[in-house]
Figure 1 (cartoon, one colour):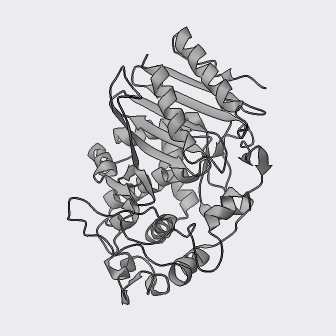
Figure 2 (cartoon, helix red, strand yellow; figure 1 turned 180 degrees about the horizontal axis):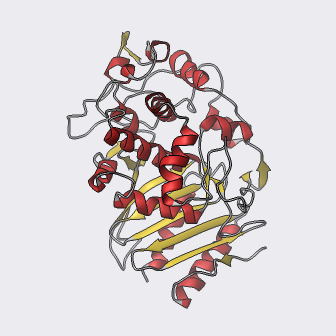
Length: 370
């Protein structure tokens, strides 16, 4: 077994360092895990990062999966501030008719004209997730969990939603106190396409120019490009159980990014402080809604933001706390805890580890708050 390597810049008490190192070692020794990398930082200037497993190191980049939705919503809110789009405008104003016509048909009526940008960002449109079950074969998510590479285009995802799936509910009334919400990658692919059309720039360019460059994220990049820092090592491999898998098609088609724990924490800090926006108060829109997700009932969702409650039972010293951020289907996480002033990022690079990130974060906070 390879033992955890902590970053030399760790700035925590020895007891905490030893506790986090032991946690990483135990995680990496699990039968179905290959490696783990995680990092924490708080408002008091303390930070720690470590990794264990073959090839793992605290500064190794990895595929961040749906953490990318935090980047997408940041770009959406920037575009809203710049007047390039409006959150409450219906999506047919931004997308061609061949995309929107009969995309959301509920009880025989095309409800797509009711879907706004805000619906997409909050998963309240009712649109299905193209990863989910479909009439034309097994779900894409099931294939991903089995380690099968998937390659699709935007048009393929829209065709699946229109022809092989059905909406979960009609577009929700966003003036109501609560709405039904169902996680939809299809909705975020539509957001990417809207961003590209209203700005005239590719998603990769937008990430690089409006987020990575201003924040100095030299090791965050789109799969269609390369990191700004040429010294960046190759990303950690994804695994099914302990078997490495090559998912080049998924990387390209999903538009999900590569990054490091250090870059992710820098991004999260800037995002929650409003540093990416003209008006810092814009960051409050991220959690303006807290709807329970139909397909992940332990989570609530804002705009591109998961909200997860940690009970007093799990945090007896500090009491209950809330984590806001995002996880990914390959065992990735990026969250901040406003109450404790702590940010957490990491990965286990495992296609069958959707719940594990939340368990790991709770264990990290237990040690951080002792």
